[in-house]
Amino acid sequence: MMMQGGRIARRGLSRLAAAVETAAVAPPRMPDFNHVPLPYDGPSAAEIARKRAEFLSPSLFHFYSKPLNIVEGKMQYLFDERGRRYLDAFAGIATVCCGHCHPDVVGAIAAQAGRLQHSTVLYLNHAIADFAEALASKMPGDLKVVFFTNSGTEANELAIMMARLYTGSHDIISLRNSYHGNAAGTMGATAQKNWKFSVVQSGVHHAVNPDPYRGAFGSDAEKYARDVQEIIEFGTTGQVAGFISEAIQGVGGIVELSPGYLPLAYEAVRSAGGLCIADEVQAGFARVGSHFWGFETHGVVPDIVTMAKGIGNGIPLGAVVTTPEIAQVLTRRCYFNTFGGNPLCTAGGLAVLRVLEKEGLQANAHAVGSYLKDRLRALQDKHEIIGDVRGTGFMLGVELVTDRQLKTPAKDEICRAMEHMKEMGVLVGKGGFYGNVFRITPPLCFTKEDADFFVAVMDSALSKL
Image (cartoon, rainbow, N blue to C red; front, side):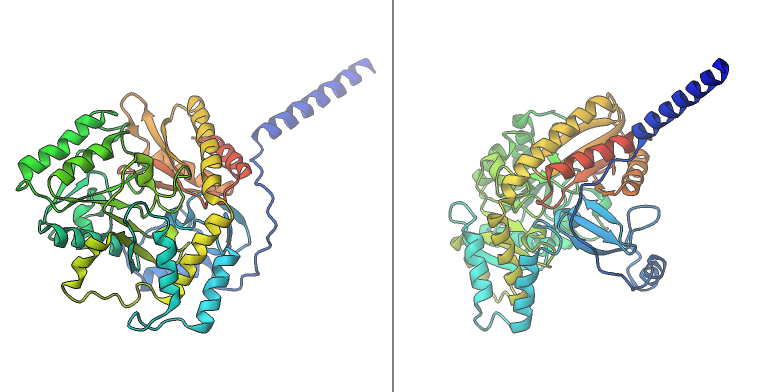
């Protein structure tokens, strides 16, 4: 009887140990969310993939070995065709700022579509004027004249052309590792071979990137700025049209510029007669948290600001904002954009500004983004594969390396980690020149509970590598 009792006790201990082990490896639990997706009766993922392969550009690519079929979104969550919920930590490439299908934005778009979808700027309409006024109120200094476009590429193309027209010079300076678009002028300003085709791209000089992690001079802003001055002195006539830069490089891997660099670069460019262009396509509209615009974190005031993505929460909308004096250059000829500033998009854009203000989303990006960054840095202490954690607000990057000293890009490992994270219910982006950086750019309604879940999932995914 005693032997039997001992066997029972041992079996009980074994079961307890198994239960403890199971609990230790149980997947993180996603925060509760009060939304039931609509039933989906559309084509399957396989059928969509077939049509995409046959009828869409062969240049399109997708994440994951089995691409997701996303059919619905609500705030910081996305749903696939089976109704499974995913935490969206990418926001359509830093585009959805208020949250997917925010009722105020959807309502404004629907109301405008029911009244007037499109006419032309040759007629008066209050939607474009109201939005331009509201947008100008968010800008510093004399930046108050708005040109609307349909995308960030269009906005940057227009800004570069305006700088050349205003100064009478042709030379543009941009940064290595930057991304500014995929048309002729913006492709020239872009400085990653991954995004450049073999077409004429003239008049652009690429300065050494002030990257504190991988840069040649670490965080020494003066040495990086000296390269801008040397480009002006040895690569141009001494006069330039302008300098274009992101405050945080998005496609380049969430690279923050060395502190103090932008004021020095702006000074050198302006001394050479050039204009300073801030590309806020990804960093703008409260994403950095501490400020509404990324350039404000560097203490500079640009001559031209470009924007897109977050401006419309997913609507095809972009803008260029500049001073009245610079804006006059486009009166020398006829400048026109058929869809730029159409009533539908500008009504949605105005709703976005109002939601950002009403719901305090900039403050949320600052508070939750700071909390998330601290938790990611703690994760860096645990996982040797994390080489760097950087960014601000809800524009964060986690760079994976196989060797911290050599900073060897962990290109394969990040793809495996993303697969694991997807299986646990988290969608995140990746980027950087080597494709080894997690791009964490969620909707600005992302909560502290979402941040905890995200970190738990990343921790679990990295532990499986």
